[in-house]
Image (cartoon, rainbow, N blue to C red; front, side, top):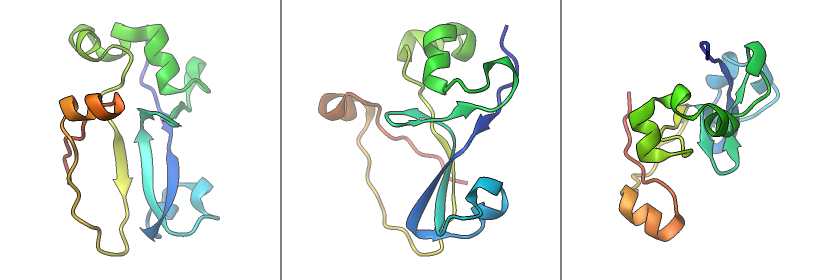
Length: 122
C-alpha cells in the first residue's frame, strides 16, 4: 500500500528567474535566478524523486511502472498508461514572460509522442 509521497523538487535556473524560490529550498542557496521548481514531474529527463519513506530514491516514472493503477487510479491509468499526466511546478519570474501557445494532446502526440499542455495558473 502506498503512503503520502513527498518529492525532491527539481530546481531550474532561468534567465528571467527570481530569488524567491531560493528561500524555500536549501539546495537552491547556491543557485542564481531560480525560475522554476518542478515539484512533481515525469517528463523526459525531468523525473522528481521520492524524498520520504521506503520508496525514497525512486523517481516518479519508476513508481508508475511498478504501482500503476495504485498510484494514479484505474481510469487515469487506462487513459495515460505509464505517462504521468501532470506537471506541478512553481514559477518565480523576475521579468515579464512571453505569451506561449502549446499544442493539444493530438498534435503533441503526432509531432513528439508527448502530451499537449493544458495549463492552469494561480
